Structures are given as structure tokens and as C-alpha cells.
Length: 295
Image (tube, rainbow, N blue to C red):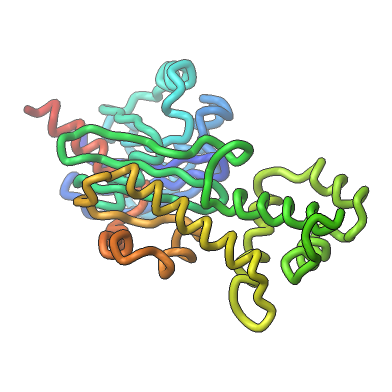
């Protein structure tokens, strides 16, 4: 074994980072999705494609996979059947370490050490590695019934407000008018048609309207309230991850970073800049597994 590969694989793309045994980064590559829920064959195809790109960038020989140990942070790694199907197709790596992409995000953000991560973008999830070695995942229940504080959650609140404004339950203000402009009408039937075809990303795209009207010359108190609610939800998530409030906290995702200046002093004082990303965390993961085997 001569090299390490760290893989960050999700539903939209895959990133692979190649390092030597001393941790020096030699190359990286990108490919399509490798979330396990989209199929083991596709996952391996994109992982290996990105890994070959990393090899080529490193400028060395294209050695076979038996010279590599691979760490993988993949979406869907909590589903046993998906993991089993994936491992069955293992193409011959000298060592394979697999975990969820949320956990490798924690490892990357804190350099393999204990810490917590609140990730809020389109969705919301929190993960923590505690000092006693225990782990927890909080939130991440999906945009339809959870993911409080996320972009999709804010978008749902915005469209519900527009519904109420359209039928006279609340006044039509700047936020409601902005939503009507995006969906293309302030009439009931077109709004219903937009909602019928909208998915998570469409609702998340409305979050920018909430932020646009939470400050500036066209401020809407409703939008201000939604932003304040989102801050409360992410702070609750951070406290649930680490009730003792003694672990460093890294924020990931566009919504978490946008809301960070509004956090209370207790939460803000714990926030640190991430040391690395999920691909870096996957490299930490495989090195830790190798170290345990050595002991």
C-alpha cells in the first residue's frame, strides 16, 4: 500500500482526494453522483472515474487499486442493504473504510478530532463526535417534515405566507409579492400549479426572497421573523449536539453561514472555521482505521 484516497460522495457529485502515506495531497478529481441510494454500480463508476483523475493529476503511474487504501464518506451509508451491495463490488483496494458523508464532514472540519458540525443549506443536519468517542446525528429528517432552519424550510414558510396573503388571511406585503413574482402569478390556480410541481430545490430557491426582505429598504417584518426562527432552530440543533457546550462547532452550508452573524454569543463563541471538507475527513477516516489495525 502506497497511497490514500479520500472520497466525498453525494447525490449530485463525487470528489476524490489522493495523498501519500505522510498526508501530502497529490491530486484530486471529480465525477457524478455516488450516493448509495442511486445504485452501487453508479457509485463505483463515479468514484473510480474521479480517482483516475486524481491519479493523472498526481502525475504518477496508474497503479492498480491494491496499492491504495480508500476512505469513503457516502450519502446512504446508514442503509445496510445499500452498503452490502456496494461492498460486494469492491474492486480490490488494499483497505476500505466507509461511513456517512456527514461523519466525514465532522472529521474534516475538526482535523479528525472531537467536534460538532451544523450543516444548513438546502437541507439541515447536525453531526457530532464527542470526546468519549460516541457519535450522534440530529435533524436531517427531510424537507417535507423536518430540516428546520434550512433553505427549503424557509422557502416553505415563504410559500405558506403567500398562500395566506392570496386568500386574505394576512396582508399582502413585500415578501408575498416577491413570491408571487417568482411563481408567476398572484392567482390561486397558477400558485397551486407551481406548488404541485415544485420539489426541494425549488422551495429552497425561495429562501433568498426571505433574506432579501429581512433587511434593506424593502424590509418585511414577516421575513425578519422567519430569519429569527431559523436562527433559533439552528441554535437548538447546536445545543442538542453538544449540551455541555464544550466542543468546537463548525458551520457548513450557505444558510448556516448566512445566519451565523445572528447567533447568540454562547453559540457564536464556539464556532471555528472548518479545517477541511468531507474528502479530507475521508482521508482521516481511513488513516484512523489503518492505525487501529496496526494496534
